[in-house]
Length: 262
Image 1: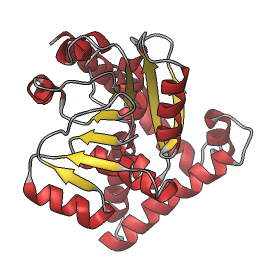
Image 2: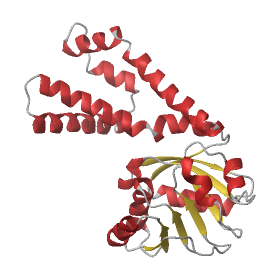
Image 3: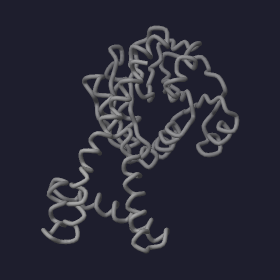
Image 4: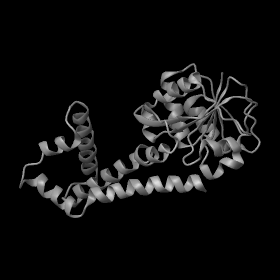
């Protein structure tokens, strides 16, 4: 069995990095059209590379890591020959992928996120009708090396997991950037503001992981009525930051649905 990646960009590289950390003997081949990226992949991970996809065998696995808008063209001449197909392309349904790949339904859709690179990702998975228990077990093992896996019973849930965990790291970076900017506005230099913001998030996450309390209860523990934290949270509530945040996640889910229709 050989694992083929069609596309060697950021998300593919993140998954490969996690796999190499846990399964050094796994045979990985990356199909990448850009020569400089092929060279980088060889140097970083020691994988084999090529510009075009070799002939697939039934016991091989093909992981599609191409941008959704480029997928049809990239799959035009592919013969799966019964191989298992995994796809991390946002918005492309199993039916659409099947059409691109000559009618195969041995497909598992995956929505990972970039913390997979450090083994702390979240991946939502949905199996098409021809993906059997062994196929699903392989997909789960593959993505478990990158973090947590969540199996979905309804493919429509892919839009929701794309909006929450798929796009979620960007939301965290957005808030980190905002906290750093606030710290700099309070007179801290850029480096100190960065370190304070990062450590505050890391500490809060670690505390939440070790606690049985909900996020809301943890928030209440550090909020004294009339105190400094209370003043900040009242300002956030005044500007309805939580409602705007929910609106943003909803917008991401709606965009995922739009991409699927396109």
